[in-house]
Length: 242
Ligand SMILES: *[C@@H]1O[C@H](CO)[C@@H](O)[C@H](O)[C@H]1NC(C)=O
Ligand SMILES: *[C@@H]1O[C@H](CO)[C@@H](O)[C@H](O)[C@H]1NC(C)=O
Ligand SMILES: *[C@@H]1O[C@H](CO)[C@@H](O)[C@H](O)[C@H]1NC(C)=O
Ligand SMILES: *[C@@H]1O[C@H](CO)[C@@H](O)[C@H](O)[C@H]1NC(C)=O
Ligand SMILES: *[C@@H]1O[C@H](CO)[C@@H](O)[C@H](O)[C@H]1NC(C)=O
Image (cartoon, rainbow, N blue to C red; front, side):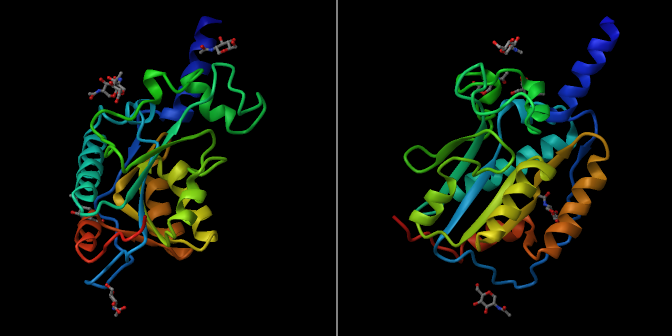
C-alpha cells in the first residue's frame, strides 16, 4: 500500500515538475534569416513560470543549468535597455490553500496536484532567485492554468501599452510556452520563442522539446530564434510605450 501511494505521489510530481529526463537544445535551427532582426518599438518580454517549483525540477541537471544561465543572461540584457521594455513574469499560485480558482476535476488539477496547495506566499511559487524583476518596470502575474494570460491582466496590459510583439522564455516548452505562444498568435501578436530559453521535463522530454521548437511552432508559423539573435535584436528595438 505504501509503495502504491509512493508511486502515485511520484507520478503526480512528475506531471508538474517532470521526471528525470530534461529536454533542452542548443542546436535548434532559427526560423529567422534576417540579420537585421528588430522587435520594433512596442514589444514585451514574457518570462513564464520561472518559479522555484518548476526550476527546481531542472536545476540539478547540466541542461537545466545551461537553460538558467541563458535565460538569466537574456533577462539581464533586457533590463539593460534604456528605456527598459516591459517584462512580464508569470507565477503559478492560488488565492488560498483551498484552491478556489480550480475545481477538483478540472484537467489542469492533475498538473498542480504535484506542488500541493501553492499560494502567493509559498516558497515554491516564488521566482527562482537567479531571475530578477526590475523594480518599477517588471510585472509578475498570478496564473492558475497553462496559458500565461489565463484570467489575469496579461492581455489587458499588452493591449493598453499597444504591444504588438512578444518574446517568450519559460518552463515547460509543452506547457506555458506552447500554450501562450499559440493563444497570443491567435490574438494577432507577433510571437518569438527563444529556443535556448525554453526547457521540457518528463518522459520523452527531448523529443517533445524538439518537435515543438522545430515542427509545431515554425508551422504556425511563428518564429523560433536563438538567444544570440534576440540579444542582437535588442540593439535595433526601442520600447516607446507608456
Ligand atoms: C543557442 O542556441 C543556438 C541554436 O538554436 C546555438 O547556435 C547557440 O550556440 C546557443 N547559445 C547558447 C549560449 O547556448
Ligand atoms: C529585416 O528586418 C528589418 C527590420 O530590422 C527590416 O527593415 C527589413 O526589411 C528586413 N529584411 C527583409 C529582407 O525582410
Ligand atoms: C534548485 O532549486 C530549488 C528550488 O529553488 C532549490 O531548493 C535547490 O537548492 C536548487 N538546487 C540547485 C542545485 O541549485
Ligand atoms: C490542501 O488543502 C486541502 C484542503 O484543506 C487538504 O485536505 C490537503 O491536505 C492540502 N494538501 C497539501 C499538500 O497541503
Ligand atoms: C525560492 O525563491 C525565493 C525568492 O526568490 C528564495 O528566497 C528562496 O530561497 C527560494 N526557495 C528555495 C527552496 O530555493
